[in-house]
Image 1 (cartoon, rainbow, N blue to C red):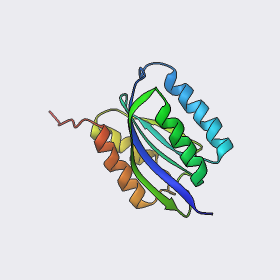
Image 2: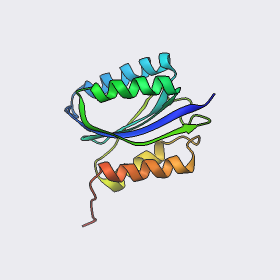
Image 3: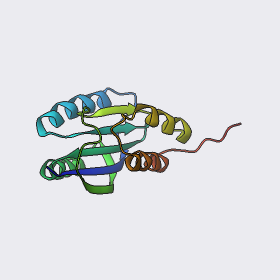
Image 4: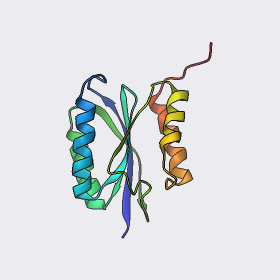
Length: 139
């Protein structure tokens, strides 16, 4: 069965200290499990970066819901493609909270990615991290 993978970024409208993010994570895991969606959600305190993968219909439905979700704005699909196998087969939706600093965020994401993530996707995730991060220079 051919699958679809979508990577998107958006600007959060929620307080990063609130329990909203934990609620998003729990509801996503439950709903994704029922809909056969797997993936990764990265949150740096201001932006979301997410990769979702599943059947084309399930991904289209989820993208439609995400576009209407008022907890974020600036929803932008950065990559969409057909895939033969999942990069996150065991992650109904893994949440990775990272520091907004580019260097710390890239390290945190790289450390968490499972071995099933192809090198091209790993590189794309790290590039996308640059889009949502601030660059900090050593003092």
